[in-house]
Length: 385
Image (cartoon, rainbow, N blue to C red; front, side, top):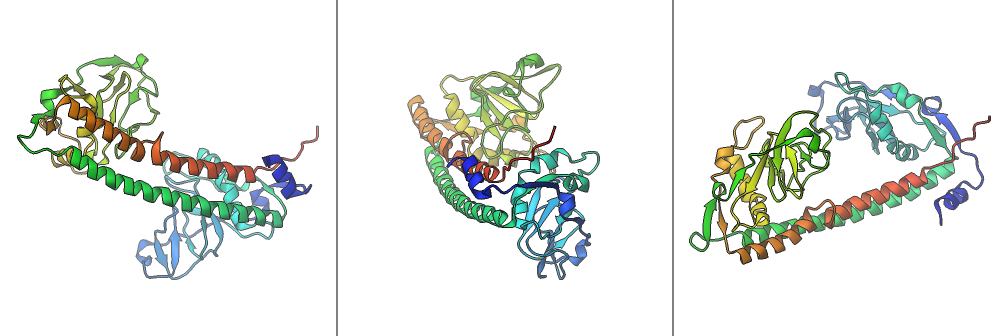
C-alpha cells in the first residue's frame, strides 16, 4: 500500500487541523535544584540540559508521559519523553498535557522537528532555545483515535527496530572480540623469528606542502573529522581558505595526534592536506607493504605505546620522536600480504561505516526514521486565494 492510500484510509476523509502548539497547550519551564539535593536513592529522576538524569530527588513536578525539549547547552533542541513522574529543571521545557493531544503522538511528531529546533538555538554565550520557537510551531492534529493508532504502529516499529539493532550490536561486539583475537595472533612474532625495525627506519613524517586551493571537504583532514576507534574519516566542515597545509599522498597513514587514546587513524586513498594536529606517516621502505604498516599502527599495542609517551595531562599529544622509535615485526612480503587480506576483511565487517555491521545498524535507524516520517506526514490546509 502506498503512503498516500494508507494515510487516506487511516484518516477516512477526516480533515486534519493545523494549529500552533502554544494555542493547544502550555510550554512550561522547570525549577533548578542545587546538586546537594540530588542523590541516587530517591525516587524521581531529575532532568536539566540532557536526556540522562542528573540524579534523583524526593519530589516530582511533572507527571509521567510528558514530552520535554532541552532548551540550554549542547543538547538544546533535543526532544525527550519520560514514562515516569520526574523533576524538570530549568534546562528543559515540558509540554503540559492536553485533552486534544496524545502525548506519545506529540513526542514522535516533535522528533521530526529537532533539526528545526536546533537551527533556532541562539549560540551567543550558552546555547539557548527560546520558548516561542515551540509555541509558534504549527502541528497537525488528527482526531485522538487516529493519534492513538499512529502511536500503536510506531511503538511496535520502535520495539522491533530496537530488537534488531540490539541483535546487530551484540553481533558486532562478538565480531570485534574475535577480530581482536586474530589481530593479536597474526601480528605476534618472537624476536629472531622475523626482522624487527623501528618506524623511523621504514617511514618518515611528510615533508611536503599543499596549497589551500587544492583542498576540499573530501581531501582535507583535520583531527575533528578523523573518526574514533579506527573508523576512518568523514567529510571536513573546516577547510583552509589561505596558505599551505601538510600534504599527504595515497597510502600515507594519518594519525590524530591529540588525545591518542581516541585511536583516530586513516590510510589515505587520495592526495590531500592536513594540519599540525594530525601526523602524516609516509612509507619509505619498499619491502614494507603500506597496508601492513597501517595495520601495525592501527593495532592496540601501538596506541598503548603512544599514550605511554604522550605529553600533557588534560590534552595529551603524541611524542613525535618516540613514535618513530616504535618497533614492530616485518615478515616476508607474502606473509604481509596474507595478514593484510585477512585483517582488511575483518576491518570492513567491524569498523566500516559504509559496509559491514555498522552500516546495517545505520540502515535500520534510517528505515525507522523514514517510516516514522511517513506516518506523521499530513496534508496541510489549503490556503484560499
